[in-house]
Length: 247
Image (cartoon, rainbow, N blue to C red; front, side, top):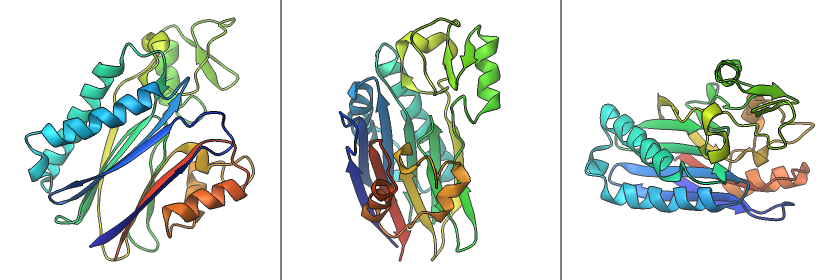
C-alpha cells in the first residue's frame, strides 16, 4: 500500500544526536525518530531497545487492532522511560505505527519531534509540542512542581546554570522532578492520498518554518527532499525524516 524513505544528516552540529529506525511488522511498519540532546547516548539506547522490544513483544503480530496497537505503543514508552531515567543525556521520541492492513496510523509523541499526517490532499494533522515555548499546560506542570521558566527554558531556580526547553523527554535525570514522562497518543485513517512524516525539529528554521502549522508546506515527496530543503533554508541542527506515502 505504501512506500518508505528515510534520511538523516548531522548538518552544522558538532555531533549527530538524532537516531531513527524503520521496522517491519506483520501489518505494516513502525517508524521512530529520537532527537537527542546533551549527547547521543539516550537516543541511541532508545532506538536499540525499541528494536528489541518490538521483536519480543507478544502482540506485535496483532497490531492491526487499534486497542492492541495503542497498548503496544504505551508499553514501549513506559519501558523506555524506565530504562533511561538515570541518563544524564536526554531525547525526544516520536513513534508512528502504520497499519497498511487496517489502513490506519497510530502515533505516540514524547517531546517535540514533529509528526505530520496527511489523511487526504486537504486534511493535515501536526503533533503537539512538549516544550515550554509552545505548551502552556506543560508550563503549568513545571511551575506546580516548583520549577521556573525564563527565556524559553525551564530550570529549578532563577540562577540555575542548567536549563531545558523540553517538558517531556526520555533521560534528563537532572530535570526529573520537572518533567512529565507521559506521551500523547493519536490515531487516524489512511487512504490513497495519505502521507505520514516523522521528523526531528531540525526541519524548522528561524525565518520560514518556525511554527508547527508551517510544516504543512514541506515538500513531502521523499525524506531526502525534506532534509535537503531544511539544509538549503539554513537549518543549523541535526535533521532527520521518515516518510511513508500511500501508493
